[in-house]
Length: 402
Image (cartoon, rainbow, N blue to C red; front, side):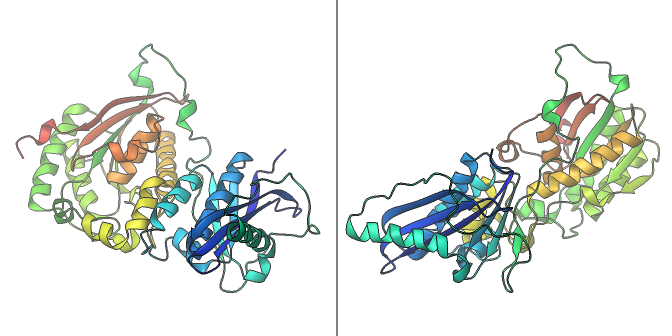
């Protein structure tokens, strides 16, 4: 039986850069040091960096075949580690599709961490890579990719602190909070009584200048524009028409949301507005305030990786997986505090998309296929037994005259 966590040691290289190239991979049990699998392959003529990425991809694929939950990737390639962690830009166009392929594999695990290690701690994978390069130089044919499980070194402890200058960057975390897996919610074709459900009215804030300009707008406190304020007034009237009785209005702490929430609270009977930091927008890091075109031009590889997996964060930012964890926390708090009542949540594009994705038990592609307008309204019901009903998504008829 495979362990739940494995260590992937990977390396790649070429003789000539570019030249005859290959990679080597070792999969270990972190508790014993036992070798669970080896992979090596000659890949023809390529650069060192391409071979290193190919080694990473092969290592993640081998770990996926073992059915593990978490992976610790250790490589002596500073470039690959820093790029996969989002700290370095992927400038070479030849590496971008490889980084995107690796990111897709990262999405198959609950967690993946990347660490840089000195070359003298990666000798096993290095030896396999050199054997593959020998094969590439002499025949150009691939070396058999998988070896049976065996212990080729004395078992050693693989955990513990990382070497100076290395460290592990958390690239992925569990998407759902404990007990918040809506994919296992009760299934029924029969309509359920709404009076036993907690109704969540999800409202995106009104428009800002960044909305109109097509800029990444995360943690920056950008106020509503004149059009956004008009949208908010129409949205407040729509929410008041949806329900005669709102128990609570909770909001992201950013002003574009609190202004929206305050207008809604006044329209439904002066309900107090409670701020909740877990409703704040995704932290877009280095992309904050930049246009979509600027990010595509400056961070094409990182953007492809981010779009490929919700577990990948923008440089110096936050992944959608981390945002989903926050959303699950705030939802569980509200369900516990307001059973059978109606609560309005005012938030941003990313948190609302993630709440709807999980309510619909949808895949990650949902995040890029769903469009949410500024000041749009969505409604979902949650029952105490975990039942879910999505009533509406992105209502915007109330904005027709704005």
